[in-house]
Image 1 (tube, helix red, strand yellow):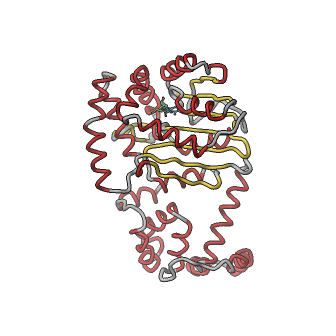
Image 2: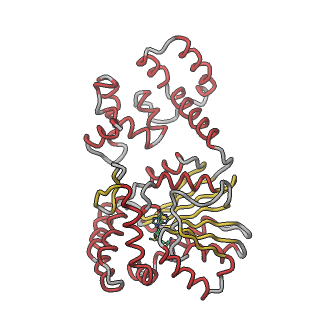
Image 3: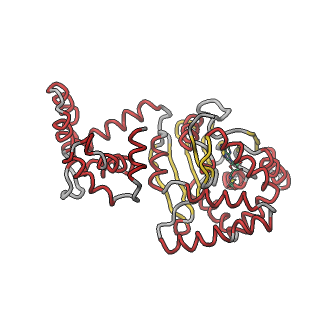
Length: 364
Ligand SMILES: C[S@@+](CC[C@H](N)C(=O)[O-])C[C@H]1O[C@@H](n2cnc3c(N)ncnc32)[C@H](O)[C@@H]1O
């Protein structure tokens, strides 16, 4: 027991239990996994996986690592598109890999494939080993997705590419309700009828609802060190593809770049001066920061000028910072009434969250 909890569907469990329970789910459904995938998505998962390949455009001779690769859907597609290349499939559940191996032999692709039992959070590979890292409908099952992304960054070569396919939150409320009705009522029953296992499919639909929205997950991709992080919504938001690149596989420059970007945004939105005043920063600190940030002033600010400088800066810096601002807006005791009132403007910018959640993340 670590004392840290995570979710397993809608259940809150100790972190150390999750991998075992996930393995239980996929071990139980492995032999009928592919049939069930077609049945519950009406075959649409194939189009999503094809869309992943369209965006990825595999190059001949490239080396793929497909994590949580299960029965090999992504690895097979990759090898077919690349013409020639190599794929390594890693999965927590051996039974899923056994099914994948049978398919590889049937499709005469076994010689270009390796199958390995392993955990996305601790990959058994050297740094800079692969050209492409994919994870399809796998990352929401991982106990700590940020750890899996950081491992992806480590094992990819400079110039490497990350691509994630996952279910997502549907932006249209009516469609989301219809989807919830279908997924919570039909999918577990289908699971019972086809696989003889209702609970595993109850977990699967619950885990989809627990996965973060597109912007939040994209921030996690960026935080792991990936550049040019982007997402593409597919099938009206039922699923989403995320892509990230590695220019130089070096973490330090990434964090330095992030620091520069934050400093530049604070300067060009006018927030730097406000923060320095609020912190009553010494003259030396103010002077140094002003000189460093001075060139960025000329980039100017093109956003909504009706907002105050601090709110402008947090909005320009993106969702993680907006959340930060939202949290501080609930804590006038820390940031002062004036700043907290300003930051309340941020409440409408992202889905709401409770005061308890805000206090909890602040105390963490
Ligand atoms: C829904 S299946 C996806 C299989 C395949 N990628 C696909 O798209 O059809 C999820 C897979 O993730 C695997 N998995 C879950 N957690 C994992 C982890 N921490 N490391 C590696 N694989 C994991 C499961 O064993 C399962 O095979």
